[in-house]
Structures are given as C-alpha cells and as structure tokens.
Amino acid sequence: MPPDQPSYTLRRIWLSREEEAGYYYGFANEGLWPLCHIAHVRPVFRTTDWEYYEAINRRFANAVVAEARTDDPVVLVQDYHFALVPRMVREALPKATIITFWHIPWPNPESFGICPWREEILEGLLGSTILGFHTPFHCKNFLETVDRYLETRIEHEASTISYGGALTQVESYPISIAWPQAPAPGAPEIDEADTVAGCRRTIRESCNLPPGQLLGIGVDRLDYTKGIIERFEAVERMLELHPEMAGRFTLVQIAAPSRSSLDEYQLLETRVRNLAERINTRHAGAGGAMPILLKIEQHGAREVNRYYRAADVCLVTSLHDGMNLVAKEFIASRDDELGVLILSQFTGAARELHEALIVNPYHVEQSAGALYRALTMPALEQRERMRSMRTLVHDYNVFRWAGHMLLDAARLRRRERVMTKIRSHSRPRLRRAASA
Ligand code: ADQ
View 1 (cartoon, rainbow, N blue to C red):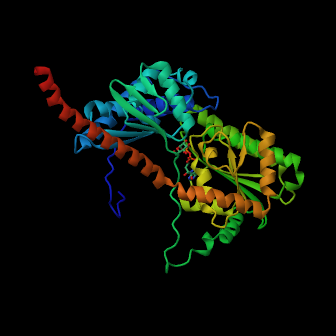
View 2 (spheres, protein in one colour):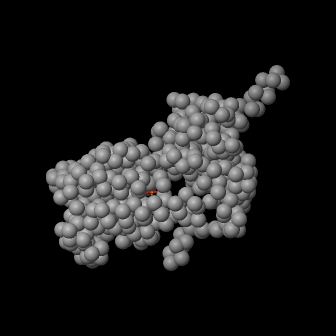
View 3 (cartoon, rainbow, N blue to C red):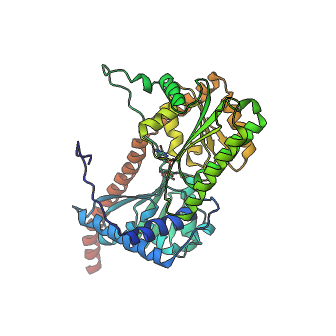
C-alpha cells in the first residue's frame, strides 16, 4: 500500500458475519464502547460476544507473530478492539516491544468494574511495553483500575505497572492531525474554489443559502457520544433567545453513518432526524433558510475541508470523547485565522485548545450563549484565539504523537538491552562466588 506508490504491506484478516457481529458490533461496540464513554448508554455484555472477541484477538495476534522477522519486533496495537492482543503477542515473543494506544477514554474503576471480563482485559493490556492514552486523566483512571482489580506493583511517580515480572509504562500521548502542507515554491496556486472566499461562496451556493448567511458546521460519525442532539438543542435555544438570528444562521451537520446495524444507533438517527425537522419547522426564517441542514452521509476529506473553511463557527459538543480530531482539523483548515471553535469540556482536545469557547454540552443555555458569542465575536478576538490554537496544532501534529511513542519505545529497548548485558556479565561472577 498504497497501490500506486507501495511503501508498506497490509495484511487483511477475514471475519465471518457471525464473528463480525459478536466481536466487532457486540463486545467491542455494545460492550467496551459504552463502558468507556460516559454517555449514559448501558453496556451490553454477552458471553458469546466475549468468546468471539477472544477468538478474533487470537487470530490477529497469531498473524502478528507469523509476520515477525526477529524475536524482538516493535509492534503497535491500536484501540479497544484489541485489548487481548498485547498479552497474546507477548507470550509468543517475550522480547517484543509492544506499544498499545487506546483511542477512547478510560473510565474510573467503578465503571470499568461492570465488565464481567475486567481482569482478562487488564491482563491483556498489561502485555504491552507502553500503553498510551490521550490524557493524563485517562492514565490515572487506568492505574487506579489496575490497582483495584489486580495484584500488581504500581510506581505512580514513574507511571509504571509491574505485573508477572514485566513492566508496562503508562503514558499520555495526545493524538493530532497531519498539518496541511503549504504549496511548494513554484507550484500552481490553489484552486479558487479552495480559497476561504471560494469555499464560503460555493458551500453557501450548494446549500441554497444566501451569500451572507452565518454558517455553523458539525462533522461527526453519527454516534450518541458526539452530542448531536444537545448541539441542535443549543441552536434552538439560541434562536429563542435571539429571534433576530432566525433565517440568518444555519448549522450544517454532516453525520457519517456508523455502526448502523445496532439498535442504539438506529434510534439515534431517528431522534436526530426528528429533532432537526421539528426545529426547522418552528424556526425557519422569513426567507426560508432553515436553522439546521442535516446531511447523513460520508464526505471526502477535501469536501469536509471546504465546509470547515466556509464556516463561521465549528461546533464540537461531544458528551465524552478521547480526543476529537474534528476540532483540530477545523483549526488547521483556517489559514485565514478566522472562525470560532466551540468545544465540549469532555473532549481530550479541551485539555489543549484553551482558546476555544469551552462548553458543557449538557447545559443547553451555556452552549446557546457560546454560539451567540461566536457569531458576534469581533474578528480581532477570533484571530487572537485562532492564531494561538494553530501554533499548538501545527507543533503537536500526528508525527510528534507517533514520534513520542517511538522515542519512548527506543529508550525502553535500550534499557532492556543494557540490563540483559549486565545480567549476562554478572552471572558468571555470581557462579564463581557461589563455588568459592
Ligand atoms: P472518532 O470517534 O471517529 O475517533 P474523531 O476524532 O472526531 O472521532 O475523528 C473522526 C474523523 O472522521 C475525522 O477525521 C473527521 O473528519 C472524519 N469524519 C467524521 N464525520 C465525517 C463525515 N460525515 N464525512 C467524512 N469524514 C468524516 C476515535 C475517538 C476520538 C479520537 C480518535 C483518534 O473516539 O476521541 O480523537 O479516535 O484517536
């Protein structure tokens, strides 16, 4: 991959329909996903799903072991679909350096304790050399969970867990995005349609909105953790408090269908559609411009970027989110240094993007107030905030994220090699001392 410029090999692992239903939709997405997010959706745990989860984790681990060319490879395991893989790989390749990154939040010990296979999940993850989360808070929750349910030695200062003679380093590595490349000197200018002015014009035209329409944008997978209902309610409340905005403001919500074979997600889609319709009926402006334009479909990255650049405000109102990359993509897209980010305090991104308008999405009045403030914010203040956030996202991009994990892994590998050497030097001396 990629086919036109091959630089790495992708090995695909096949699942049957039943395996996909039990392992992916079942244990991972009806069990672990709601378990780790505080969104008040009950996790569902079924023994059959767990059995599929174990079996599929084993299949992936076996594939990794079969691909290994040395007895100490560096293995990167990603996300909650593979909690058991680190231990399984470790058993076959004891000298491997295994980096695991958990992309979603880690809950507190009480919440995690609901999982009937909590010990197995923890033991699985502790097969890792390094276990990464987005925020120090998720690391702290993990350490406390391990402390509650397993017999281990935890060094809080070093953030390490010693279990069964092996050490796991638990660290925070806030993920980010690839900063957009500036055109190379001499390269053709970007299309007019991709300039901020071009995006503002064409997106409004394609949405049948007047040229001066104030535009909000929401981009999410259609997931109950993303706070789409709460976002629509905030729009409605803002229009009630500021009726002069009716017809002048539209929120374009781009929602990618996700996990739609699960009841909870079908229910959410119906609720989202109905609420948008109700708000549009009640608050349509005199000119006919709707407050909410709902597009339940996957868009290309270039098109999403055009929406970001066309918007006056981007709304990220997740009820809980490991990081949230939409917030960072919006910032990266705004080389004009304008536009306002409204950001939920329950995202990992809120730990870094302090110049966003931070809101509690459960508090509809507060979000409505932030939306009005964003729409009336002077350009000077928008610039100050945007400039500061752009510096941060530019500097802490996804390459830094990967680089930090790899540097830590290299440091631990070096330390392990030195310790092995010291042990092999001191063994003969110990034997001599014993025989003397
Ligand atoms: P997600 O829950 O998927 O990721 P997020 O970080 O926002 O959430 O990433 C979503 C990505 O999908 C973004 O790149 C966005 O542009 C894209 N996207 C969303 N809707 C789209 C649409 N309709 N059309 C096209 N693209 C769309 C999980 C965790 C997050 C964590 C990431 C990365 O839940 O908390 O930030 O992993 O670790």
